[in-house]
Image (cartoon, rainbow, N blue to C red; front, side, top):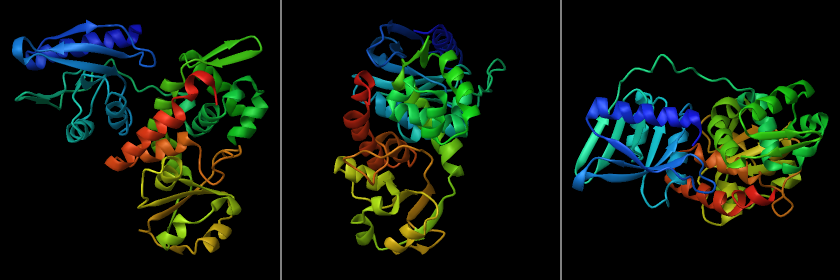
Length: 339
């Protein structure tokens, strides 16, 4: 376990005892492959004791709890989120999706075998600071997305990375240094290696809906759903995201809303899909923010990483299930073997 995570864990267990009287004990501290922050904790004693599979993660985005619950769904124990701090709003969200949590301020949610503990409103510890990372601003998210989708870029020049990520040349160096300092990239002479793509993906999907997506000039429309479902967007330099991307990639989901990423101007896509402007329409058109070609087997669908992020951001149960399928079948297998 990383030293920073150890400090968070010890503080959270100490505050759990202070605010509730419950004792938490680490019974397994051996990380599974691909789950470097997971540990097993026993909370309570005797017949009321319960084992939790814990994920230690900062919660600075509203999407994080759903992501943690999905990743711990098949771990064999009750999922438990341990964070530096949980706001009241996030605590309510965790309770709504039945995700137990602890934080270093003493906020707690536990529910099991007739025992219910819910403590909120504890103040944020003064020692906590909001980290600001270059890789999670707008340009950083575009560069990080390109690195996740095109692993060969790790060996490319800074100029090539900027072109593929559709960012300025000057943005690339600071982002790469940020990723290296935080352990995502190992830099050697004339070579870079992405050493923790899973953790970088988690960070990217939690920040994308807040820091990048709102800046993509979204426009809303109405259209005939049957016409949309049969449309080939590749002829209009556009790509399906969200629920339609999930349907194309997994054949699991019947789309109820329609997300399109398009190059400007969007006149071709408006005409081809017979879109009618509507502020409450179910069709959303956003700007393309990357500079690489789509997948050859799905030329009018966004990369699975973006489809995954779109689905998680909705907090809809069926979309979360579709996101899990995309992760397991199209994203996770690339972690060891490259894209």
